Image (cartoon, rainbow, N blue to C red; front, side, top):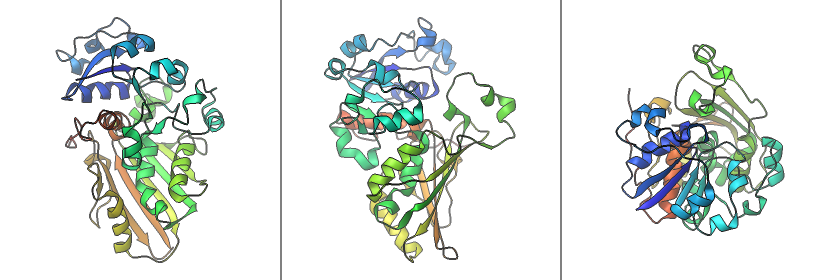
Length: 346
């Protein structure tokens, strides 16, 4: 049994980790970390856990955690994991960080986009970017995994095969994305109040969203060139879900069958990526509560462009589900353990 500690267990991603790991056959949560609710019963914070979780919330003492658990999930704001991790801790325990602290390989880029001094730049190179479908073998050997961002996961997986195969002009790539309000976290914020969000849709972080360099870096690895793109996120009035639409110029004339064959080349054997039938467009309601990513495309012969579409649950594949997928790989378990969740409907 894998002993698990969660720092930040009362945020949305942390709560989703608890939901998934509570039903995991090979994992036991022994530390429910939360600075905001120390000594408060976890089930009093999340009443869906009444008579399921009896533990109380504890602090974020990573030194003590390293002595007591096999893996630590840090579902915390940027900067915390980097400020706590050190070589002694990593020699004792594996860490899966759900923040952005180790996702970007250049500390200066991280500091520019996040406005924080990186406290552990010595571990950036070692950290494995935990997008399992792309870095599976590296994740298996890792002791520190940088769990990708939610927008980033959907954007990269939607575009990756065509970037890898040189089918799109990366200089023309535009990514438009929509997310439910849980993507903004559980902290109190006027802009996320019901009256602000309901019956409304708005763009935010235009030209400045922090997931931009992460998407650029990972797609740059795929295309083997520096990538600079436009990424515009939008907030929509729903709890969960991300819908990504990417636009790019094709590098040559191609048929729908050729593009479909490329997606199948990369994803036919991937449990959690579903390339849809020809006429279907991804929808967030068909992936809600699951670890699936639904993907499809349209070739626009008139403009010589391709429209790439992806949908997923931002709290599952975009955060906690992906983190559990990484844990499974790191401990030699079946990758799908605890994650074979049928999407919820309605």
